[in-house]
Image (cartoon, rainbow, N blue to C red; front, side, top):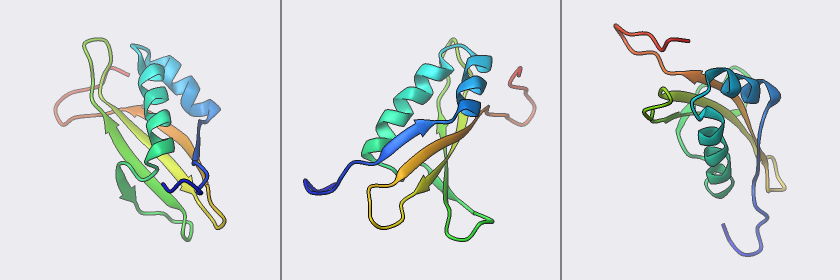
Length: 104
């Protein structure tokens, strides 16, 4: 990001916030740390297909801890000209692995 470019603004939607609280184990703190990082690097993660035109949807994985399961986080990066753009963390869910449950 150049000095004259405004920073990206990232937010956690109410639904994602509530989901983090339901998951527990520090999920909200982990997603909040991701939110702060996305303001510096808005295209972290893997770009997902969008059924709605040029909508930029990304998913990323947050590794688990002893207290928290692995999380999959989906966010939308809306950056029409002029910048800076807005990121909405829209979905947080426990990652599911073949042969095992996430317990949620």
